Amino acid sequence: MENQIKLMKKLIKAIVSGLGYELRKKRKPSIPGNSFPSNPFKAQRQLIKNLNKTDIYILDVGANKGQTARKYRSQFPTAEIYCFEPFPDSIAELNRKFSDDQKIHIVPKAVAQEKGIATFYVNERDETNSLLPRPSSERRYYPKSAKPKETIEVEVTNLDEFLKESNISMIDILKFDIQGGELNALHGAESLLEEKSTALIYTEIMFIPHYEGVPLFHEIWSFISKFGYSLFDIYNLGRATNGQIRQGDALFVSESVRNNVINKYPEEP
Image (cartoon, rainbow, N blue to C red; front, side, top):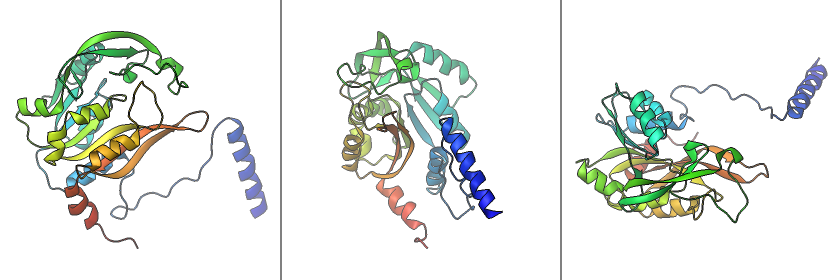
């Protein structure tokens, strides 16, 4: 009987593999109180919950059509969420989706180091729009369906000045998904970082260029580590057909979160 089960498993695995999929053993369910959430948004909620904060502020930089804002709203029902998005079609969709939520604020601007007007590169898939153009001299690692489409001019702000103008001194989560513009935007938030005024930084990271002059993961990590932020976890890793790791999302935590939340968990068994 045992041999028949083994043979059946091999047969199923071969069939699944032939269809282009990979069969893996299902993880055991998490035991409440004995494990940390593997979902990045639930992980952020858990970390913030342990800070015993009441008023939560979240900056969603690169909001697109509100996909991430919806996830944050589900985890933080009363948070003030600021959605930064420069693409007109996406701005219209954000306004439509969140017209009844008075605590979601739409900021129709791109975010970078300096304020002003900039060229915005629009691609066939609007979630890949960027202040950076697609690379012209390297292997194409982005999907063909996300090829360049057109350029437009957009208004740009930086976070330090925006927070000052908005009279916001502390934020809890700083989220970036701006397609290669993350490091440039972080340079425009140096005062925020120096003052340790954000608890978490959740950002898209790239391991291989998808845009011209795009900073890679190690450059972002190196920059924010100077302000005392350390890596907590990496999520949503994607790979190319040649096996090259392409991109993902990283969660960095402040020294305060590291010392007062993470290091307070019991030692490993």
